[in-house]
Length: 113
Image 1 (cartoon, rainbow, N blue to C red):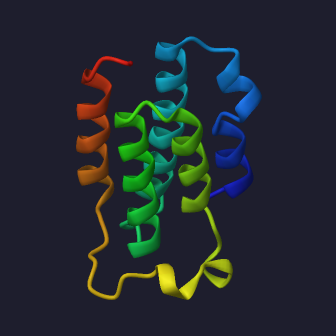
Image 2: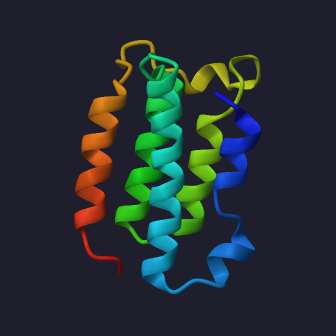
């Protein structure tokens, strides 16, 4: 994963402020899609940390908290050496890019609010 390219694809606060609600949702969903495509290109599942942060980002979209969604998406890209050990869920399972893509597709069908 080219982390710098992916970070650049995640909208910042100023970008989100300039968009209408539908634009905010699309910008964050497109950034999530870029991260999922990067995982698929590496032919690997998201690890537990990445899965958890990705799902938190998607849940924030459902609550129309687009800035929080972007922030949680940035956390997906946290290097393993910088992650908070307490945040790792020992019993959680990693997610395949395909399962993350299914969730993303469902989110795209839900109207922005």
